[in-house]
Length: 323
Image (cartoon, rainbow, N blue to C red; front, top):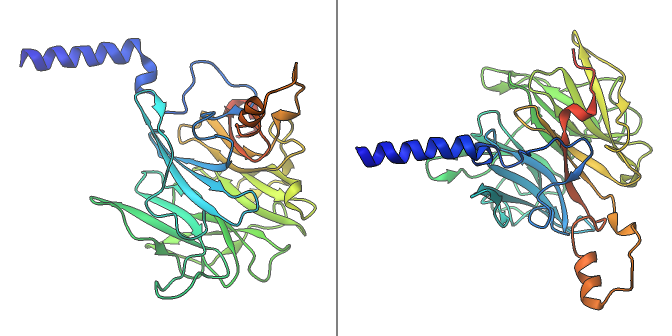
């Protein structure tokens, strides 16, 4: 008993004097007013990395690692242990098909994502992307579960994200939209989704709207759109929900947008940090002297090389007009 009490006191003092030990893995000791690369060299490691999604406690992050030509999309996972992020692994439910856009439910018990995996295991991969989910069990993650209509259609669906009341927001290329890809939402009632509704002209346009992050209380949305239609024109926009009506979407200013691709917006569950993906390139910075082959290879194969990285910034730095 004495030994137990002593160990408990030591743990308490350790938490008090080493606050980072009991903080989420994305927590910083100082404010981040301008976007910086997240987990540089570990998660953002010089590959095409994007689409970070954290568990509620902030100690697990799912993210997307892609081929530069997007021929491969794989969901990876890393864990915050002993004050640092672990070497990423392929998520248990990914690795075979084109999987992307992870989203973790508010209690961490479900992960939603998109995939071209077949609905029936004996079939070949689908020509389009659908929304799936896995459920945490006592033995790990369940087999992926396909979300049927009205969520999925014969066309591509993208980027599931959910409010605290269970309303699912996502993008879709289904017919009847205002552009090639629009943002939709579907309310949940008695465990079933109701009709998928186009969110309307304030957000959707003749161009493409793809990746909506909806705040848990549904007060604002940050999303990615290509205006005009070209991935090179991918930028982040924001809209506010004023008594059920969405305001006209506004483009986020620099440094949250740049002349590179910006996408995959996420706000951590505690509301403190904003994460997004970007292909902005810091290799354009001048170097002081000629490099050796080893130095060159190390530099162009590191984060910030223009392929794609995950960025982190204080949510307050966005200065959103949330009422």
